[in-house]
Each structure stands twice: as C-alpha cells, then as structure tokens.
View 1 (cartoon, rainbow, N blue to C red):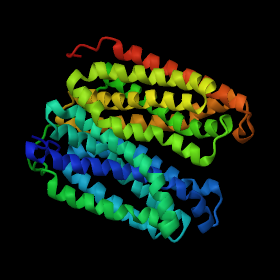
View 2: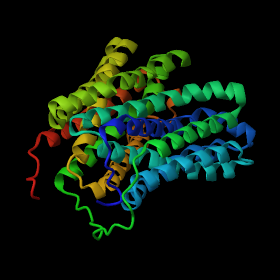
View 3: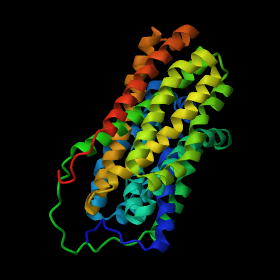
View 4: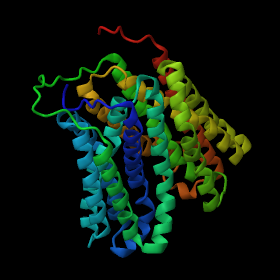
Length: 410
C-alpha cells in the first residue's frame, strides 16, 4: 500500500463525498465570483481594466499551471495530507485577498488562491475514485459535476449580493469561513494516508496510451465548446436578439440550472449502462445542441436558443460523468492524483481555447472586432458559423469515441 491509497469503509463514503463536493464548490465559486467585482475594483484601485483583469487571469493561470503538479503530490505524499493543505492555503489566500491594500497584492493573493484551487479541483476526483464502490463511481463523478456547475452559477449571484452589502472585500472574505469548514470536515472525515515509512516502489511514469490521449482530447474539445456558449451567448442575445441585460441573465442561467439538475442522474446512467454508451450519448447530444444553436435561434429567436441549450447541457453532464469514470477506471492507485490532474489540465486548456480561439472565430464570422456595433444579421451569421464548427468538432469526437479501444495489454 502506498501513501495515496486510502482504504475507505462503506460508512465513510458519504463523508468523503461531502469533503470532495464542498471542495469542488469552493474552487468553482472562486473562479466565477471575482468577475462581477472587476468594475468596482477598477474604481477602488484607480486602475485601468486591462490591469484589473489580472485578478481573474492570475487565478486561472495558477490553477491551470498547478493541476498536474498537485496531482503528483497527492500520489506521493497522500491525498488526505495534500488536500488538507490545499484547503488551508485556500482559506489563508481568501483572507489575504479580502485584506489586500493594493491591486498587485490582490493579484498575488489570487495567484495563491488559484494554486489552492488546483488542489480542490484535482484531488476530489482521486478521492471519490478511491472511496466510492465500483457500482457508484458514476454517481460520484456526477456529484462533482453538479457541484462544479452549482459553484459556477452561484458565484456571480453571490458576488452581486455581497458587493452591495460589503463592498469588494466581502466577495473574497466570504470564501474563508467556507474553506475552514471544509478543512475541519476533511480533518475529521478523510481516512488517514498510508504511513510514509512503508517502502514504496520507484515512481512510474504514465505512458499516455491511445485511449487516455483520446479521452483527454475529448475533454479539451468539450470544455472549449461549453466556454464558447458562455462567451458568445451574451453578445448574440444582446445584439442579435435585442434582449435586455436582465433577460440575458435569465437565459444564460438556464444552462447552469440544467447542469445542476442533470449531474447526479448522469452519474447513475454511467453506473447502470457503462461509461462507453453514456459517453457516446453525451457527445451526440452535444453535437445536436451545437447544431441547434447554429440553426434554431435564427428561426425561433430566444425560444430556439433555449431549446438548443436544453439539448446541449445534459449532453455535457453525461459526457463529464462518463469520461471521468472511463479515464480513472483502470488507473493504478498511485497514479490517480496525476491522472486527475491531467483531466483538469485538459479541461482548463479547453476553457482557454474556447474563450480565445472560438471567440476569435465568432468575431471573424461576424465581420468586425467591435461586436457592439455589429448588426443582428451579422451576429446571427457569426453564431451559425461558430456552432456549425463546434458541431463538427463534437461529431469528430463521437467518431473517435465509437472507434474500438486499444487492447488491454497495450
């Protein structure tokens, strides 16, 4: 037994799940809660927007750069030990953010918070894989997907309330007591790591086989498509359909709401059907949803947009639960942290590509970099071309998923 192997009795599965779910929620809220505070931060520090953006960029960059490292640290030094350290660092960094005397101190504290968030998004996958019974792995992954979606949706709403009540400092300070609660729960609930004095074999290097690379690339592509909806959607709904900001917010909340509702049921489907059929079903729904986004809004307006999102979002949750289960199904116990880190890394790279490359494709299709001046017709054309490309990517992913897997011995 090595330091990352955690023998978890059935009675403590729920406690481990609670720690993992709360950790994932914290990291997701930390990702989305700061965005709404940027205008107030610009005024508070008398800084231009391109400098204030680093409050968000520093967190995402630190998270992306750290996920594989923290996964390996979990494998070598124990999932419990590293996870508790990550929660403690997140709490301290949140306090430092709330007490920041200037912008660049805040950026530095957000960098520390992003490193801690890498622990909170990576190790829950390994913890759930180690603690859940074989018949409940899909449900465990579905729960983490639900908490990630809930945190992403909760961040802006909670941030808006706190900005009015406490100013920008409360947006960061509110995360500290939640992190401390999770830290206490983790200290009490997570089973101990194996003694470090137990001799361990020399660490092995994972050789990324065809199946692992395929699943990581699928994860990257799906994340890019989902980020595209979050970036392109508000522009199209505002300029293309002429909706008010309030209505845009309501329409954009449909996706996270469906994600919250469909996460655990998606995991149950993985447990019942196996990850292969559910993965293919998720990719098929993603392709259909992208095709719907390219065609239906131009014909049915906001109704068509919502219908397409109602198809797309359950496909995303089905894919997430099945893909995470598939990747971690046969991973050695001393490599679960590292592979969880690779999953997080591929997802974060996909988010960055969705926010940059796919958004650039949308702007090119619209025909102008100044989207605020584009005509409704041009916005519709941009939406159609962008999501036709996204549908093609998802169909390519479906083809790759349906190909026979590599022999087990490879």
